[in-house]
Image (cartoon, rainbow, N blue to C red; front, side, top):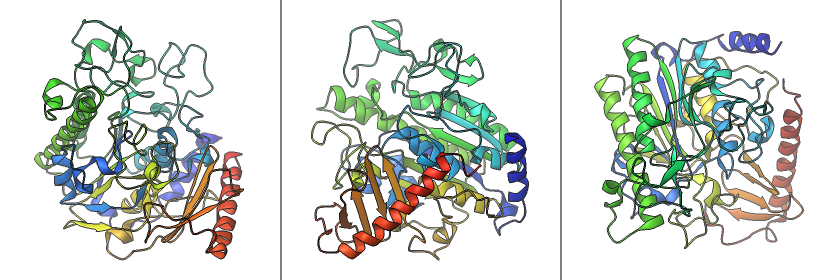
Length: 471
């Protein structure tokens, strides 16, 4: 019955084409892991060298106010491929729940249009095996959260369930290290299995001996042949590229550590692995140009949440924003983001409109010509095509957030935040006070009351979805 429903949804979506449909844009969604808003040069970062991302920004729509759907990674990732908030489909926190089979994903949608689909890097929307011990939750007999790419319309996979080291991803030091190990482990030297594997299909574990060196490069080594093959076959492609960088444990090779003289340990590895990832983004963009497909490829970049660790003791930067990973203050959910699409974005510009990971799904659906229909399935994202065309400067609906006991709602100007599930609220004017330094709740009780009403109605809608009432 579930399969029949998905077929019906696909057929209904195929109803009409948008004005972009004949061009069938390729789509690549890049996401890094725990990168802060201030960690990149294009947002004013002064420490980490990101020349390729900065070059991409010089040809992109820079989204200054782009939000991850959650302040931790697993929930955010599901929002990308469904356009829905994670509390609708049951991924409430990291290593919790899975992407339900009833959800209609970007992979499945684009396959109906003849796209080749691939997922490379981190998955984190369910376990990848029920046969062997793997990562955080995969183990023999654990079927509950088994939800792999090949269950959701992905043709080509190179995936890990969750985090891996950012260099020599299958290894860790025998001696316990905190946050990072420096220098990078050499093959066979004082190391042991990390315990998280890469998978290319059901029961198809990638041979660990082939996985040496920078993890971002290993991911790109698998992504580029997928793109080359689709291009050679004259097929549009959809590639999701989710780097592990700079999630702990951060590890970098000597060449990238040496870009940061005067640093060592955690900082050298953190900065170095980000620059190593940046190199691979440059490699990807160069390949797209060489293949002649760069112009009509929608290439998106973002992070899954804010930076790890405490301010002042961890190298990641949330810039001037309040909070970090795990927080619904801006520093935990406002992340660096770019959209490059030369066919539609002819010159660099930036937007201060509230946008987010939930918007990828409806934007791509519109870009490839799917007909928007009412499936009685609430969507939290909106199409950004009008923004890309220069015809939108305010979000037509607010963005809601839930994580543990925290809830928040953000519209164009104001944001309400609660750390106790709505018993008390704070209010911030994000246009005047993006750093959330001044709580206006007592000064503007009417704004708080109306936004709280909207937020509670949205939470109730998410609860209905989570109970299966959308399917």
